[in-house]
Image (tube, rainbow, N blue to C red; front, side, top):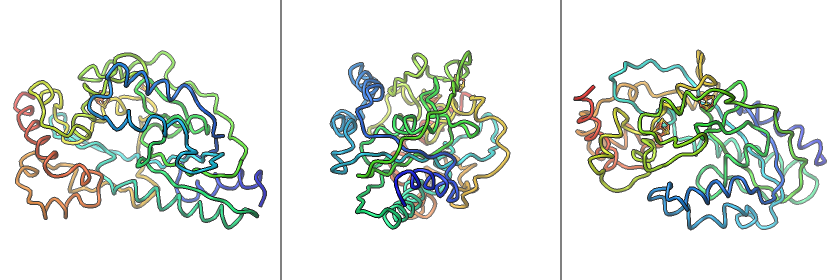
Length: 314
Ligand code: SF4
Ligand code: SF4
C-alpha cells in the first residue's frame, strides 16, 4: 500500500474502531500551539504544573520522541453520554466516570500502528502517545483536520463536540496531510466564558489554571488554601461546566459506541462522606480502572473535604 492509499484507509480503519475523527499532519514547527503554551508559562497561568516548562522543547519537536518523525496521525475517541444530576449533587467529571482512557485509546492506536507497519512496503517506525508524553495534542488535532479549539480551550469536533479523548501516532514516513474543516465553532457564542464559576476563562481561548476547578482537583498536589477550597464548589474531581453549556455538546442522547467507555453507575452519585470513609483497598476496587486512581486517595479525600464543606452553602 502506498502513502496515498494509507492516508485514505487509516482514517476509515480508525472510524471502524470507534474514533469519530482522524487525520494526518506534517511534522513542522507549529508556532501557534507553542506560543499559547509559552504565554501561559510566562504569565504563570500554568500554576504548579512545572513539568510543562521542562518539557517545552520536546513539545515543539516530535522528532525528539521519535527520531526521524515526519507525520503525526491524530485521532479523537468520543465519550459522550447523557447524564442526569441534581443541581446540588456532588459531581465527578464525565471523563473520570469511565475506564481510564489512556489504556483504551492506546490499545486502539497500537492496532492501527500494527496495520500501518504491516501494510507499508518499507520499514516504518511509529510511537503511540496518549496524554502521557509531551505532545501538543490539541494543536496536532487541529493541524490534522479533526476540529477547532473553542473559546473554552477544548477541541471541538464537528458533529461530535468536545467530549473526546485524543491520541497520536508519530510516524517516520511522510503521509499526505489531511484537509482542515471549514469550521468556526464559537462565532458570537460566549456561554462558556459566562458560565465558568471561578473566572478561569480569562478571555476567549485563554485559561488561568490557578482558578480552574479541573486543575485544582486533578493536578494540584498540595492541600488547598481556603480560597481554592471554596472555588471547587461541588466538584469532587474535574469540572465539566464549560463543556456542559457548549451548544456543540447539547442533545446527547446516545451512549458512546465504545463499550469500554460506558459510565460507571456506582460513581455517578458518590458522596463526599463515602469518599472520606474509603480504605486504600476499597479505593482500588472502586476507582482502580478510572483516571481518578492516578490522582490517589489522599488528594481525592482533600477534594471530598472541600466539597462537603461547600455543599453546606448550596
Ligand atoms: S473546567 Fe470549570 S473551572 Fe475550569 S474553565 Fe471550565 S468551567 Fe471554568
Ligand atoms: S460554549 Fe460557545 S463560546 Fe464556548 S466553546 Fe462552546 S461554542 Fe465556543
